[in-house]
Length: 251
Image (tube, rainbow, N blue to C red):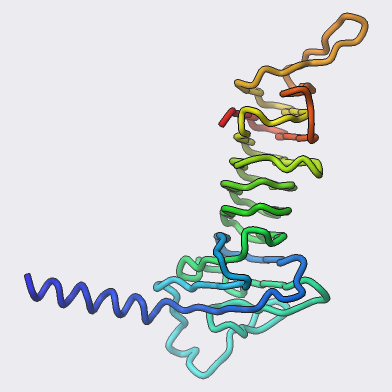
């Protein structure tokens, strides 16, 4: 039993030593713009800086010792495979590795405005933010946003999109679209909104009671394009999928 305990402690110490971190002040930064060809995980923390935490699996080749990782538009200045630099009042965070970076996670304040762009064949996960989010997948990948308030703009060329709102910011329109994939959105039950739901080849499902406007006593009903309001109307929310289903749920 003692031997097992010693081995476990040694493993945990080794795991901690291998986990690498990078921090950068966000003083004067309006937007953090993240670009990656690897899977992206972005979460929140209580500090007022960017922290990139490299996972324990992050290892550079033995032959790379003494050398610096370089990629499109920059070289690693973080020791965790990222190139980070200021551009005006924006902070650019560019992932130089095409692998999963040992499950690297980016941490930012919940109130930070972020723009996240996936340029590879990977998924994206964003959680906990209370300010503006722009997220896009240019090739293939699923996008998941959890416990957010918006406003948000989300686009994927090929992949499913799932968004779960804590509450919905009423200040700016919300747009969520994918060319190939499903759109699955969860809103608090009391959210006031004007909805535009469109699926060219898929179906539309919801458990909200939609108030659909009529014209001269006739209601416009379409299985592909539905416009209506919930809770007497509010922020404009547009959900679009060219080939997949749309799911709009109460929280």
